Amino acid sequence: MKNKKTFILLLAVSVLGLNLCGCGQSSRSGANSSDISGANAGSTDSSDNTGHSGANTGSTGSFDSSDLSNTLVYAGENEDSINPVLTNHSEITDIVFSGLMKYDANGKPVTDLAESYEYDADSFTYTFRLRDGVKWHDGTDFSAEDVVFTYETLMQDETLSSSITSDYEDIRRVEALDGHTVEIQLEQYDAAILGYFTIGIIPKHLLEGEDLNTTSFNQAPVGTGRYKFSDWDMAGGMITFVRNENYYDKVPNIERLIYKTVAVESTKATMLQSGEADLAWLNANYAATFRDQEGYQCWDFTTADYRAASMDMSSDFWRKNADSIAVLNYAIDKDAIVKSVLNGQGCAAYSPIQLNPLGSSSDADIYPYDPDKFAEEMNKLGWEKGSDGVYERDGDRFHFTIQTRDYEEERIDIANLMSNMLKQAGVEMEVVLVTKFDWTAGYDGFLAGFATQFDPDMAYKQFVTDASDNTMSYSNAEVDRLLNLGRHTSDEAKRKEIYGEFEKVYTEHPGILPVAYLHGNYVGCGAVDGLDTTRVLGHHAVGVMWNIEEWTIHR
Image 1 (cartoon, rainbow, N blue to C red):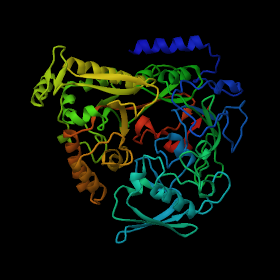
Image 2 (cartoon, one colour):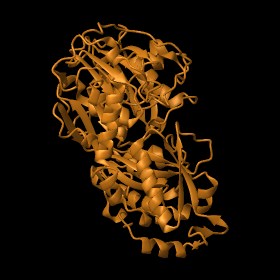
Image 3 (tube, one colour):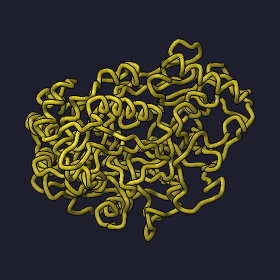
């Protein structure tokens, strides 16, 4: 696998004939601006939902593109909007916007836009005192009214297309006591809410009365964070940010960040090899090709990011056969997948909160790889093999479809290995490659990725009945009870017991077939310094820029 990947990567570089400054060299100063503005490298599902068609959606800053000596070029992910109330799964959202709180190196919430806060346990009320002198990137004063606007949007806007609204359902009211003081009262104690106060605050003066799902603000954001949006070249797949010289905390060392919207994993590796990018998250096998190369360095982060076949419980097949999801675990050699597809950079998965400090209950690790046990349990469930070796029950073949995005090589490899293993056991998992996930096409699930890198309550919105990120219609009354209890219990030891019980119940009645947890493998040129691997990262290894203000680049 490694030799094959290396050959493909080097061949791509030679065919492209790129005459670029090598990533490991000491300088890119004076490089032609075309070196950083090439085609949208493999961006296959990024779309402009607001109808913008031009190469530039607006500008709040400019720079001399001939001088890249203090510019970081990052090969990132597909993006179509930058707005924290729509999604919290974005590296760049966190550098443009800031919240009342932020996560520190250990994943604990600490003050950010809030200078301080108090909590009254009797009334379940948080009172935040805001920093003085904070300004939006357009120069407007930041105030308590912006905080009220942000949280009332999450609480009251029924048209909002957001996966995170369930995080805030315990909020009763939000009130500005004065220009720099905000009071947030909850309906009841919520153990996770302080972490959810890290969501970026959005500007009332720009968004009041706007449809947040479609506003052009989403492609030309204005925040209070460490970096300011400059422009978005959609044709070229490049978003440019400049450091916020008026940032209220430490101003970043790196002056400019060029974020390339890249989908195809091999393209990211090629960009690093050619010098077109300084830093990227790569899958384990691509990262391995750089480990012994002069001029490159690798950072291996712990993540809470796992891959699983997530079953659509509303599909006809799973409505009839949900009792047969758990048994599939016996037919999957998860360790073999970790060793091959992940190059050993990860571990076998059995629980959606397995790597969370309040998770990892050994009582939930109940499905070893055991084909004989699989066959025994299938017989108990009433399945019998047909003449072609595929299990049948009540006239149905054990055949289901899983959609996988066609540009994510690692997920495709995982899905294909799962399919082969299940086929040998008598189950047909059909892998369907799609450019973009289609939730209305009738597939029985998708090859998913999720993470609970902070509080285990992050699982609430995914698994509680009708919660905001429960896209696969999972529902289990005992899971609902336990996740509600975990959210509303204050004693940490008791919470660990509750989440351990959740793991056990969910493992016995799952909506996903978990396969593996991934390490977060970042590769960069030798000029980049300051990445801190203390932080546990999230899905797609998001969170690496948590301390970007400390990073440097020396060319």
